[in-house]
Every structure is written in C-alpha cells, then in structure tokens.
Image (tube, rainbow, N blue to C red; front, side, top):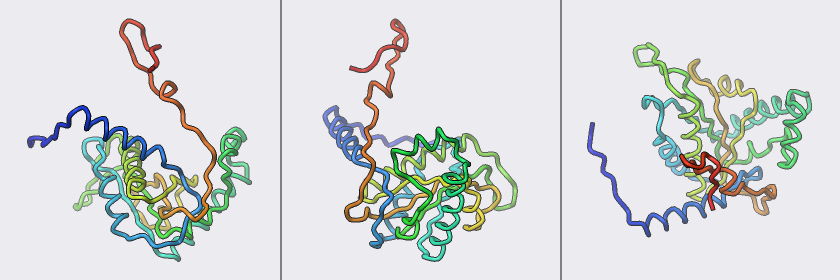
Amino acid sequence: MITYEFTRLDADQMTLRADGFHRLMSSRRSVRAFSPEPVPQSLIETAIRTAATAPSGAHRQPWTFVVVGDADIKSRIRLAAEREERENYEGGRLPQHWRDALDPLGTTSSKPYLEVVPWIVVLFEQRYTITPSGDTLKNFYVKESVGIAAGLFVAALHNMGLATLTHTPSPMGFLTRLLERPENERPFALFPIGFPAPGCEVPALTRKELGQVMVQFSADAGSDVAPA
C-alpha cells in the first residue's frame, strides 16, 4: 500500500470544475458524419491512457484497445459491419420494437463513416487473462469494468475536441477474426474517431432531467424524494 496523494479543493473550486465539466459533456453528441481530416495518433493514445485509468474488478484491467488507421482494414470493417447490419435492419433480425426505437435516430445499415474517419478504435473485453506462462486468470466484473473504461474514453475524446460514436454492430465476432484477437477477448464496442464533417447534423434529442434519473433516498420518506 502507498499513501494516496489527494489534493483537496475548496467549495468554490469544486463547483467551478463540476459546472464546467458538465457544460462540456452536455455538448457531446454521437456523430455519424465525419471529416477525413487527419488526427494525430498521439491524441488517440492519450485518450486510451485516460480510459485505462478506469477502476476494474480486482484491478485486472480487462480491456484491449485496438487502433486501426489502415485504409484497407477500415474498408473491410465497414463491409463486414454493413453485412451484419443489413441482417438486423432488413433481414428481420431486430424485432420491430427495437427498429421503432431506432427510427428517431435515422440510422440504417449503411456505415460509410467507417471508411472516412482517420481512426477506428475497437474495444475488446478480456473474459480472462492469459499470463506470459500461458496460465489463465479469472477476470471479475468484466463488462462493468470495460463499460467504465469506454465512458472515460468517450469523455477524453470529447474533452480534446474530437467526435466519436459508440457503434456496436451485432453480432461483432467478425472484429475478433478481422483484427486477429486471441480467444480470451470479445468485442465490446467500436469507436470511429475524428472531426465532425462540415454541416454535420445530429438528431434533435433531449436528455432526461435530473429528477428523471436521480432519486434521493430518505430513511423517513422512502425513495420518493426527487431533487428540486
């Protein structure tokens, strides 16, 4: 164990930082129209380093971020993703209620942005760890851990002025084969990363208010105390 070097901020500093970060993240949107403008690989690496600070079960850090900038591989990812998505959208693999929920987003099986973006990062979850000696170690709370890392990754990209989309073409087994990942890894999410295209449009959506996502529990009043 080591001593945690924690910097205590005063109340005003905490409020300024909290409000500033909230305003920043409130402007984040998932983007499906990207510019081909190059993005330095160092920025992608920094975002991954940030994501890798996420807490994880037993500190197993059960994630692998595969970075793809090669045009041929991006094209192959697009073709394979669209093949799966056509089965979802047009082949009836998605139930009607799911397709109805997606209608406001205007999504289709066409994913041209996968070839346009300068980078694709595919996040894999490690179901178990393979040690250098070839032994296996059980990983704990894998999906929870990788989900937190994914959230930090999205926040880091937005903080540095880049756009992304959490894309999960289902099923995603083709990514394991295409990117030659070992048997202990499974695709979790695919992130196209770059700058929004000029004139990029996003769905006109609203986020739930605080009172819809937070419940303040009170021992006297039960859990029916909503924030003011």
